[in-house]
Length: 224
Image (cartoon, rainbow, N blue to C red; front, side, top):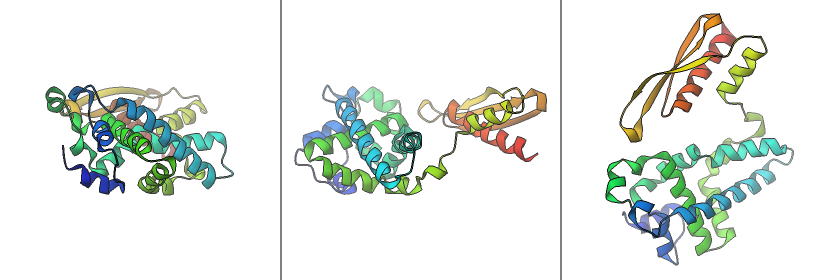
């Protein structure tokens, strides 16, 4: 494991009980005292802090808008991106088998570790302290958030557009899966037979590739 002092500096917090941070960085493959309980707590703390901040920032936003804004910030993909920026993957302790499988770079684990550290800071300090840290780290994501910027995902938009015109929905088919297990790339084709239109999308998961294809399809059918 890397020097945890460097990690504390990234979060702007020095642990009184460093064992909590060590636990937050330990995968279950490396020991019985691992991060999952702290992740459970951190998930709740993170959700509360972001919910409160959005509630205060957008007094006119509806419950649905606030929910969607929160989900954009606390979803796994966003937390994994923050973890990558903080370099958290280099601090995680894995068992030998898990380490060989490339788990250090797995997005789901990186997101979990982010939450477990939040949980550890909360236990080691207090709500006000962990709130300040979360708001600092999530500042960019919060700046980008606004109810007027909430967009439905591409698959939903193309579905609603086509249904409104009585056109059959696209058919999505995987064309290719490449790369190692921990960093796979998917290529998907989306086709609308009745319009004789086909586009390709790519992404790190089937879902992401389908969304990419749906976005290209939406641009195609609405601009032709």
